[in-house]
Image 1 (cartoon, rainbow, N blue to C red):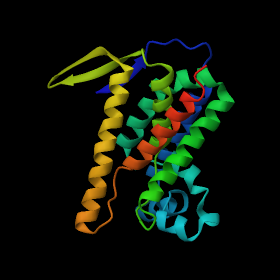
Image 2 (image 1 turned 45 degrees about the horizontal axis):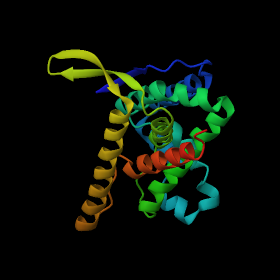
Image 3 (image 1 turned 180 degrees about the vertical axis):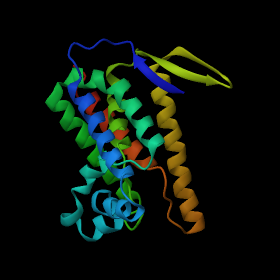
Image 4 (image 1 turned 60 degrees about the vertical axis):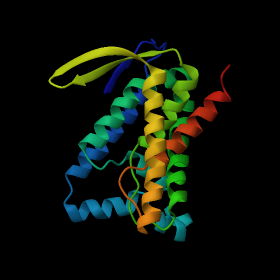
Length: 219
């Protein structure tokens, strides 16, 4: 299930949403041009390494921003950019370009901080725009709860599009991450190992930050 576009027209062109997508794509194209050793070094410099942030906050805090523009593969990039494309335009229209950029980066910063807090000694790099985009989803849910999203649906060999309430799409996103987030904590506790992979708690943290901001600015 992939959202394609929403039904709400915008009054202004979402230049920053387009710009953010462009920057993410350009950074990823740079990533795939690197050798494995160079890519590992690149992530060490610009992704959040929780253990390094814990031991050297003043030297590493900028990675809470730079990590938002890194991705671990084509699927990671494409899925994030689709959600930003569909939901970001109305949030940018609502806030204005400059406030939207501050909102986006702040959600990403606090989302990465939330993931760090869950396991401050992890050496697994944390990266991706998902936390910032989760903040966009949280705000969208509060400000546009009645919107419907044209969504691509895969039914075996058949592909079709249907209009789905934004509340349903975003609700599924939140519940999936909530269940997966707690499951990852339980797995780590039972097996005595740290878990890598998807940064569920960054998603949840970004979503809560975006929702709270929107609740405080509903007028």
